[in-house]
Structures are given as structure tokens and as C-alpha cells.
Image (cartoon, rainbow, N blue to C red; front, side):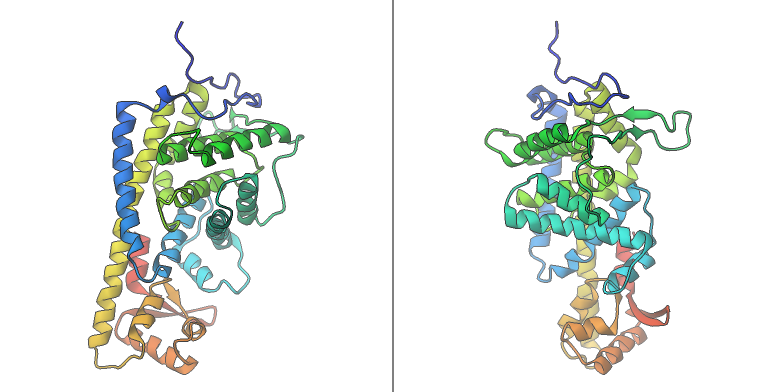
Length: 376
């Protein structure tokens, strides 16, 4: 009788309290196909890390790429906002935000909160997941209590819409035990000697299968992906645009998760995630190059212009840290007085570098090149 490599979920309507602990058996990931795709993903990620590490002003990446990751991850959960709404909200973070832009910015803050938590603590624990979840939801809610009856249902409008496709483990003690196993797997590279990218993909599935919270598990799990890569020093900053691939291949993403649960099909899931890392590393790499090239070109154009701008390097770099700028941003950065900042921004509008927009009675200056790059 053939050995059972992975015990699948026998009944999708019953809480899967017997979700197998990690690690999974080596036979499930030591295949030629996975090894080849793993090599491609590692090479692409290393190239991205090398490019991002040499950029002098990391704020250009921190405030642009991570914002796009937040937008894409939120769209997976059907939280939609336009680029204009999002960028305006980001430039107005000191004001009261509402609706989808607020949800997206919460995700971005949770991404960075997780990054800083791990930078200080050094390893994953249950508190890491709770903190990220609470930041996303702006809630004091915690791990699902024993009385909750949580099920995952088929979405869409097809004939199977609304049917239960998975019921995660139930009971706080059970969930906490499985989270402890997950954090041990994430942290202990001596006992669990698996390539980091495979570990990330396996851990993402396991977290989603545990489904420890009433809501926000998808976004928390996607933040886990990026935070794990920075924790293992595969990236200096959480800038991988990973949710873009998942959003573009949403059906395959959910099919991959269910494929493991119902058929033990780890191969397809791991190949999907490795391809996601490879392609989004390349997308992010290209996007960074476009941003830096546009910044350098505009800086050269401004310096050659007859108009004399004070501190042109700092001025242009600041304009590339977010698509929408305001006079206040330049003043708060200590670059210029209010009158000089307004004068310089208006001059860049005359030079067709910026576009002045009046929204709700307030003046904003849109960086046309940066906006175009980020909107692709």
C-alpha cells in the first residue's frame, strides 16, 4: 500500500482540527519541476534585492511600491479604490479617512508594522499575527473564540456560489497550538531545513488553512509573505509587489489553496507561488528602474532650465516619494518656506512636470510621470 504523503480534509463541512502540522514530507516539494522554478524565483528576487539596495533615497520605494502592494492585496478582498482616491488619501494622512482608501492604507501600515515588529523581536510569534491583524482591522478582536462557526464559501454567481468549500479548525486552544507549530516552522531553520521561498509558500497555505481570525486572514497572510522575506534578509524592505500576481490570477490562487486541502496537491500550489515570486520580482524591478529613470531625467531637465531652484536634488526626490504633493510636504520636510514651495511647485506645472489639481478646495500637485508608472 502506497504511503499517504498528506492527509487531506475528509469533510469540508466539519472543522479541520486534524490539519496536518508542519513540516510537510520532502517528497511533496523535492521534484524537478519545483527545483527549476525555485531557481528562477530565487534569481529574480536576488536581482530585485540588488537593485533596490543601491537606491540612495529608500523613501521612493517605501512610499510607492508598498502602496501598490496594499492596493492590489485589498482588491483581492473586493476592496476597491481608484488611484486618485488612494494617492490623495495618502497625501492627507493627517486628516480623517473613510471608505476603501482607509482600508488600503491600513494594510500598508500593517505591512510596515509587521516589518518593524520582526526587526525588533527577531522572530515570529503569535503576537506578530495578532498585531498585524488588529492593524488591518483597527480592532481589538483576537483569535476566533470557541463559539464561532466559521466557514469558507464559494464566491461568485455560478451554480456553486454560496456552498461551503472549507471549514477551518475550531477552538482557541486548537488554533493556538497550530499557530505555535507554524511559528516554530518559520523560525527554526535548523530543524526545518527547507529553502526560504518554499517555506514562505508552505507557511502561507498553513496560515490560511488555520484561518485564526474572524476576518482579515487573507490580507494578514499576504503580509506574512513579504515580512518573511525581509526577516530572512532576502529583501531589505517590504517592497515586493506580490499581491499583483495573486490579483491577476485570483482563481488559480484559490484553486491552489483548495487543491492542497482537498487533494493534497502541493506541487501546483508551490509552483504557483514560485511563479508569483519570479514574475512580481521582475515587475517590481522594472517599476523601480522606471521610477529612478524618470526621476533622474526630470532632475536633469530642472537643473538645465534657466529657472534656478534651490536644493533641486532633494526637491525632485521628494516629489517621487508619492504621486500627489502639497505645499505642506515641502515645508514639513524643511526644504522651503511656504511661499517658495508654492512658487516652485507652480513652476514645475508650467514645465509640464506636475499638474495642479483642486480637490475639495485644496491644491494638490500630481507628478505625471510617477503617476503613469504606478498606474500601469
